[in-house]
Length: 206
Length: 206
DNA sequence: ATATGTGAACGGCTTCACAGCC
DNA sequence: GGCTGTGAAGCCGTTCACATAT
Image (tube, rainbow over all chains, first blue to last red; front, side, top):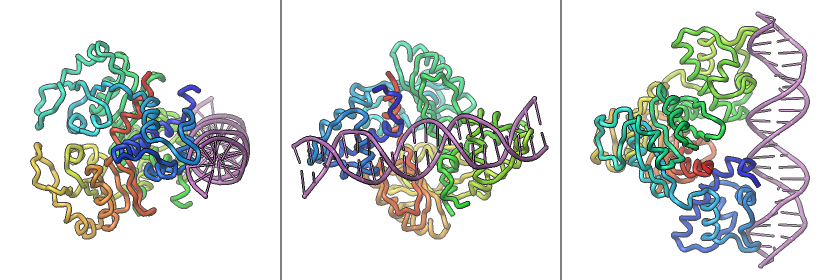
């Protein structure tokens, strides 16, 4: 069963399930049914079971799922068993906030280095990560075998920085720049476009 | 043709088209074909035409679309003709960055007020928006008929703040809290879960 | 009795093919 | 010839119904 034939949305939901399972684990709950877990995750029970079925059978009929072992399975599937290093390019407003954001560490990621055209630009709060000049990015990525990157530069330089990332060997980019990135097919890009999300939401207000 | 039968994804893409059109406008380009515009937006030409077809016929066969008038049509459809006021709850790392983020103004939104449990908390840079105590949120929303809100509080207080938003009359929430919000069906929630996005991306690195 | 696993039906979005118009 | 508009076909993900296991 190849990776490519599993729906992206299913993969995304695995992360949601994972988070719910962690909360159950903290509360020392050992077993959970697809109905209960799916409700916590905001999806339908059948969908949860279908999602898990892409990877195997992990439940016990009549009983449900073992919280700990299901969590381990998902961790394994998502490839987060060992911490993935991540770099960030563009230490402006948003980039700074992302560097200080504690949610990443909590989920097992560490932003190991940041890059900016002006590493010495005045920034207010202490940022817990070294900021290097952008020209050092390619060599850093190669020397440390970094596979994931966060792109938080202005739209005007987004494509060129992304090109550098690809050249250096980055395989997945979380893109906050408000542009459509062109990258080779083997590089995965997820776009988080804040202004677009707002604009889109406004459609749903009467 | 009711709003509900138009795919959400199509609405989302309208925002992308809009942004591309603005760039064309700035460059004084008067006409654009579906092929050219769709390429800039990262979609297929047929999809662009289908998306527009939900709302009417705006092109000229053999020629293409008038950039200015198509842009106006999309603006009208998205309901962004007049500036939509937006409030933000939770002025922490991420909330502060969002308040300073210039991308929103550029797309025609203004965050008119921010709310936090501790409005006097030490924050580094000058934030260009008044920060009120969270207890004032409901009355502010009602008095100013605010319809959109950004939720950037920690997960632990996310649901209760969302409840206040709903009670006050907020119709659309852009949710940055890492939780599944429960809201009435008529309230639209879009989730932006940064840690989840990273975790999800890691699946695509070999 | 209760809950999972899954083939089949369903629904919705995307793509195709081509008719219609400039 | 070039490009839009659109019914039809295709595809993919979700939901259903129920067989299966404890």
